Every structure is written in C-alpha cells, then in structure tokens.
Length: 483
Image (tube, rainbow, N blue to C red; front, side):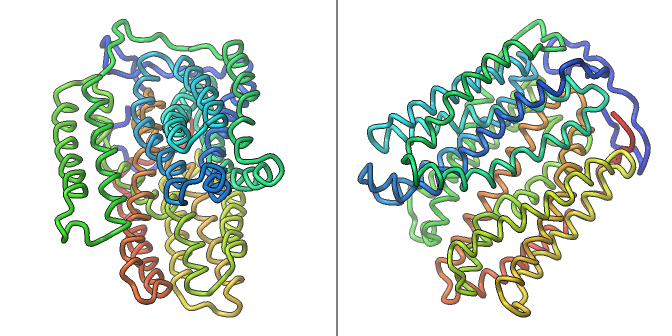
C-alpha cells in the first residue's frame, strides 16, 4: 500500500503480500496472463448489460404505466429502486469479491441478473416489476467491483491501463441504453427491454465458467460481516428515502412529517453504529482503512464531488435546457450525446498519459474543465441556445474523460491489493453524490418562481464545489509508471 508521504512523481514500493488470515488484501498478480482480452470482453459485456438496463427503462415509463395501469410516479420506481440497489450492493459486493474471489461473485451476479430480467419481462403488475428491479439493481451493482477485480488480476502490471479502459464501459452503457430502449419499446414492447438480457446472460455464465479463473488464493476463514452489511444497508436505504422525500416536498421537516424525520434519524443512527463497528472489526464489509486510511478519506470526498457534478449531470442539464431556453425534450437530450463525444475524445488520452504524468495532473485538469463547463451552462447563451449548451456539454465531457480514469486509478493505487473493494466503494460514493445533488436541486426548484434562472445559480454552486477538488487532489499521493 502507498504511504501518505509520497511526493509528486515518486514510485511507491510494491505492495507486500498479506499475512493475516482475514481482513487484508491479497497480493496482486504482476504477470499478464494469456487470454486476458477474452476475459476482458466477457466482463465488459456483463458490465455493459447492467449499465444499459439502468437507463433503457426510462424510455418505457409511459408505456409501462399504460399497460400496467399505474401512474407515472409508480413507474418511476423501476428506475429509482435500481439505483438504490446499486448503491447498497457496490461496497458489499466489492468486499465479498475480496473474500470469496471475484470470479464467484461475478458469475453469481450475472446469473441472478439474468433470472431477475426474466421476472421483470413476465411481471404481471407493477409491484412484481419493482421487486424484480430491486434485485436487478442489487446484483447489477455487484458486477462492477467483481469485474474490476478480475481485470486487475488478469492484466497484472498493465492493470492501470486496462482498468482505465474498463472504466469507459459504464458510461457507454448509459448512452446506448436509452437508444436501445426506445427501439425495443417501439417495435417489440417494453417487456423486450428485459427479455433481451436472457441469451447474453446465459452465454456470459458459460463463457465465464470456461475462461475466468481466480488467480489468487482466498482467505482461510470466510466470514461474512452480516452486522456490517445490515447497518450499511439500513443507513443507505433510510438516508436515500429521507433525501428523496425532501426532494419531492422540501417542507416536510418544517411540517414535522414523521416519515421523513424518522428516516433521516434512522440513517444517522445506522451510520454512527456502522462507523463504530468498522473501527472495531478489521474485516468489516467496509473497513476503516478504506474509509479514511492512507488518503482514502480524501479520495472518498473527491468521489462524492465527482458524483455531484457528473452522475447528476444526466438529470439536471436536459431539465435546465427545457426550463430556461424552452428546448424540446429531444433537443435537450442531445446534450448528453455532446458530453459523450467529449468523453470519448479524452478518455483514451487519459489512459495513455497516466504512466507518464500520474493521476494528479489529469484529475486537476479534468475538474477544471468541468468547472468551466458548468460556468458556461450558467452564463446566458451567446448565440443560439442549442449551440451554446452543446459547447458547454462538450467541455464537461472533455473534463470527465480526463478525470474519470485518473481518479479511478488514484483510488486503486492507495489500496493496490483490494481492487474490487475499492471499486465498489468508489461507485457507492459517486452514486450517493449524484442522488443527493438531484434531490437537493429538485427541492430548490420546487419552491422557485423562475426554475431556469435558479438552476443557473445552482450550476454556479456546483462549479464552486468541483473547484474544491483541485486542492484536495494535491493531498493524494501521485504515482507515475506501472503499478
């Protein structure tokens, strides 16, 4: 593991093998293995499938509402519950992958995702659909950390570049998902969005059993931190429920709403008990060393801010374009395409420059571009609004493309033997930042008489928050060269 005193450009010592039976990382495998690109393709397709399912359903909400005879609010739970399931599963699955091996967790997740997709496609009512989507979210959240562990083990000393490339799969799915969903809903009906997962899921299970092997020994003792998982799950579910309730009605606390106040108090209590538990148990599902040890506290804060600016982008920017400039929904949605193009322009460059520059300069430049993009969004449009907003979206995309692979590797360098656990924790903090940003923005806009200009000021606030990352980045040890 890296020590907190490493300076810019210094190459840290290689990670030492773990000697304790539990709660420690396994030594990394340094030699790239044969067939690694075939394995990469298998786990990348699994991650792409889970990512597309997160967004593809959005295009089917009106159809689902009509066919199942439910209001849009109920239909939207098919998206919300999926996101909540992922937030809960990401850190838990990452830790379980370290304990039981990433192959086992990945294959169980793919198999369960396939079965849940079948149930979604055959759902007779919205309750059954929401329950199956919750399972999809939980097991879908397990795919990212376990797949990252598999990639890291297979690529050995080249794992930094492989993981940088792998990090581009998830946003690609978020872009393709709505397009695929629209085509399927138009020509086959909403159920095909889920049933199309069956054949790939079965093939991935077979290919995974054949191609993937665990390249590290598992711990002698296989104890699951049931109490830690229960506390973590309770804290996040109640916390997100409280924030969501506030987002729909900001006056709930002032009115003494027992559901909102109770959910937030229970979330705080669960968080306090979990932190106490993590300090006392070295092999906790999220041990204290991953929360604040050796620069992890700083990286976790950076990931929350990353989630505020990036994960919340998809929901906030199209809404802003419609409310301030009156763009039609289709024109507003193309702003996400502009961001995707910007990401593709710089993400590969970021991967190539990681070893030469280290992650710190790329994170700093990427976040400065994000700040510039949000400032452009907040400014009055110069010329046609569609062109101006597309420019702003493209600038934010350039920033995301530079910062994302670099920030991912920054976390992994701090705990090089715990790739799956670190990846799961990173995803949890980013998703949390995104949901909080959306909920707070929604709460503010609900009481605004001019939502368009109010959201412009919110973008200024987001730009200020993202600027905080620049000094934070200098508190994280930089690393050049291979792992």
